[in-house]
Structure formats: C-alpha cells, structure tokens
Length: 189
Image (cartoon, rainbow, N blue to C red):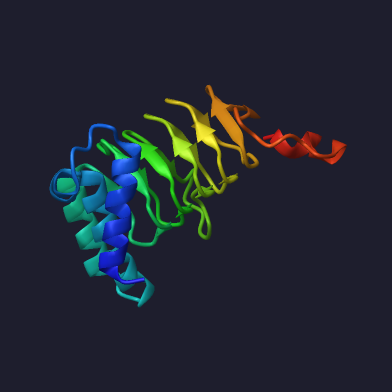
C-alpha cells in the first residue's frame, strides 16, 4: 500500500471514530494523532533500515509538536487512531494491530531495563481508554477494551474488558459465546 492510500485510510478511520470530525480537510490538517502516526511511519521505515539517530530525532520533534511520543522501533498496524493524543507514549518494542483506537494519556511502556521484547502487543480492533497504562511484555487479544486509567500488567485474551488497578478482566459485551468448557480459561489474566 502506498503512503497516500494509508493517509486516506487513516482519515476515514478518524472520521468513523470521532463524531466531532467535520470533514476530511479538517482531519488532515488539525488531527495531531494522525500527524504523529504519519511521521512515525517515516521514522519506522528508517529504523528498520538500520538508521538510529535521525528516526529518534524525528520522533522527538513530533513529540514536541504533538505531545505524542512514538518510538521509531514500535510496530503499528493500519488505521490506528489516536484521539486527542496528548501524553500518549508508545515504547520501542510495542506492537499495535489494525483498527486500534487510543485515547489521550495512554502509555504502552516497559517495566525495566531488560533487553528484548518489553512493551505490550495490542490486538486488532482494541480500544484503550484515556490514561490507561499497559506495562511490560503483555498481550491483549483482538477486540479488547481497556477502561480509562486502568493499569494492565498481565495478558488477556480476545473480547476482554480490562478495568481497575491492577486491571481485572471480564468478557466484553458482545463477545462470542464460549463453545466449549475449554474456553473457561479464555478470560483469565
């Protein structure tokens, strides 16, 4: 997919998620969450080709202008929408699926100085509420939801809602019905 096709997809996703979006031109010019994602794509492409300083410099400049910090090493899927955005931090080894919605003040962070995978992996179609903190090498399944200000430190399966400090899991409204007793462990975090 070309960069411009991705931009069109991102604008459509923003208009789908934000009832305040009045038109594509407004979204293109004033949505800082999209600007951060677009610049991340450029810095990530450089990062994956072995460049280090310039991608980090770009990410810090974008942080200055948008209030959103995305490490160039983070892997982001299609149609990520960061609504309001201020204070969002996405760490180096974070992986975000397609069609994810992130609100302001969210952190996808690490828990120490260890090497390797140390940031969360977020499944497709996940919604992460304002102020939520997802910490460490954890995985959230597809179609999950994280409540505002939740602190998530353990993995959870698909169709899970996580709320509280530390976050507790329960089946998300609209989740498919378990087909077998083996699914009992499905929602355990």
